[in-house]
Figure 1: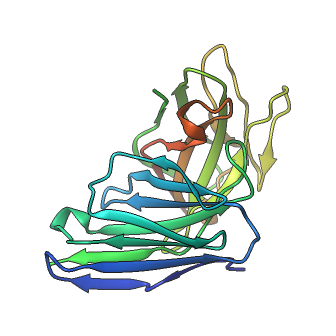
Figure 2: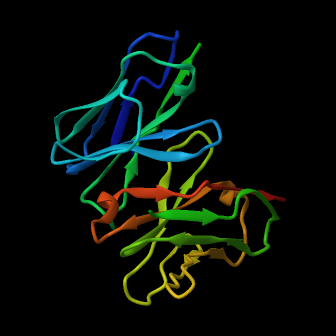
Length: 113
Length: 115
């Protein structure tokens, strides 16, 4: 049963374009995350929000910016995409920080030509 | 900083044989360990998480024991099934608040079970 929704499923774009990915969770969780899963399946945290406040901002290029409108939504914008941004972007949520299970969405696969 | 090292690359097993995927970690503060599993074209989902006492978590025949003395949280199953074929991640969270509670993943182990 899907409870973390991501759109779009796939996106193909050219270098230099701007893209936005959406994420919504219906679990009533307070914490949401964005992860990047690269072609080697390495899974790395990019951002985490708790009660709409930025908690973790890993060393990602400044062209990436998260946007939180409320606790159920966390979007990701990439201002000017680069080829190395090609990856699957996974959104997740949890009911708290630390020892709580994270629920992942199906991901958005970005291909930059 | 926190880090997780797990059996890298591909592990291929015949159905019915035992499964052992290694996971060791380094953590400055108070580690909490997880195993996540990702089947092909699906999202990662939680398989197991450690307890703070000495209980051994179990799920779908898999179990893992946190050994703080050796900084390990190896994943085991007595008999592999074809449906166990998936990518397995060991992950660490510092529950004391160090590293802002972020979840650090190992590089993943791809388990393939053959008939």
